[in-house]
Length: 298
Ligand SMILES: [Zn+2]
Image 1 (cartoon, rainbow, N blue to C red):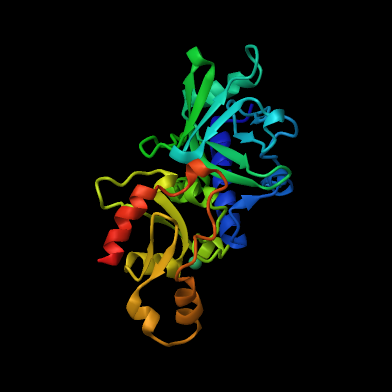
Image 2 (cartoon, rainbow, N blue to C red; image 1 turned 180 degrees about the vertical axis):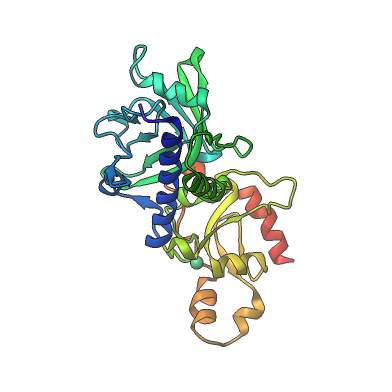
């Protein structure tokens, strides 16, 4: 077994690596090959198990990652509802085995990565850090983003330089925006208005603004939008009605200008939303859209 501090350090390195990779590639997905080639100090530590849904490195006390494949027939253990950011994951048959380390992750309160494959043979989305909550009665665990639980890294015994690095890495990941994460997953990182697919140019927009007490952290209160369309939505220059139709402010429609105005904005007028989540239950809430649309109409 590796020392506890080293296990913690590797865990935080995994989060750091996933985040950095998403920033440099502009993609929010990872191929199986990429995930199999993660290295820590030159030593390969695959982040996915070859054949199982739970990745339990032999020299780790607790689970490192949990995965669901798009082929549910091969994976009867998971019941996923990303809508509220919770993932329910059933124990494997029998006692012992993979369950021991999964339940240990709950006891130790160490964060895990949840890899979600949306399409068969497709790449994986990574959700992290997620915490495991054990429900032995139901023989299942729930994975959740907990804003109030902090990764308690065991700092005693960790060399000073590595401790400083670990603290920085963990701090950077603490406020992993859960809302952005679930919205980007549902919209496959594409702008709902124009279909732009560059993660770095995308925001998770709220339909009911988060300053409103009726706002909720749920995918149905979100829309993936590129920066310009998000800004236009917030500035009431662009509206979306309950039928998922895009409207552009009348003054803008009467203006003549360069390609951003002509194509980026005016051409969107009267169009339907171009990108919606594959599953209807994740589509934008029509009542919330209608309420927000009133503000656009003025
Ligand atoms: Zn856009």
